[in-house]
Image: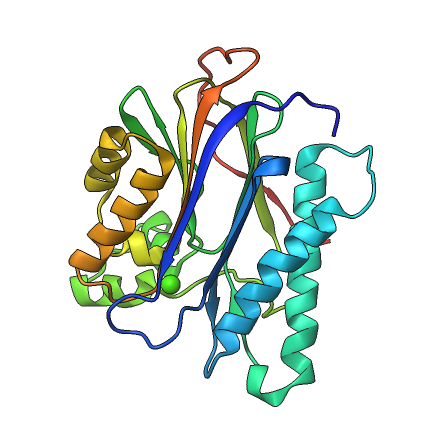
Length: 263
Ligand code: CA
């Protein structure tokens, strides 16, 4: 890696929650590489756990395997494709794992930019100057309906919120969202599974990130608040506080994610 590293305060916190028996979320933070990845698994009987673990490990292994002259974003998209293929193959090798899959959201903070990839409904947020912005888009049936202008009953909305329109492992080909935006000292980045965002609105999440003295406290308080709000799902958060960055990025509008369609 030739880019200069910035100084970042990282924290990872995960909890099974108050209802589920297993934690099907997986996440890895590699402080040495200034990157993090989070997957939320799905599938019966431990399969979701298997899928999310394959997702995060294959992603990191692919990113770190050998040198590459390709851009950070191109390598990240490639790593998501490798994770998708690995889960898809594993799902077909064992009948107990049939149909398993997971979401994936990953962040790379090398240079002075935040690069990300996303499939599913695990989210990336940025807190800057007290304002919280969701950077990724949810790949859910609920959001699709909203885009089509279809109005739903609250009960229907709740149901469709959890139905993914895209996930790793369920199909050999996958469309991957990606993008990047400048970062600067003081920014706080948050990766999370829907176990956080189904329990907490953006307002309380923003307030927790603003009040925390460091990444560890921010991550712990997010998880505690999700548990107190019900803890109906596994909850996983990764927090990255940018302590120092070489060149302060100028204000730049956050663009919607671009999509790398299935090849
Ligand atoms: Ca979940």
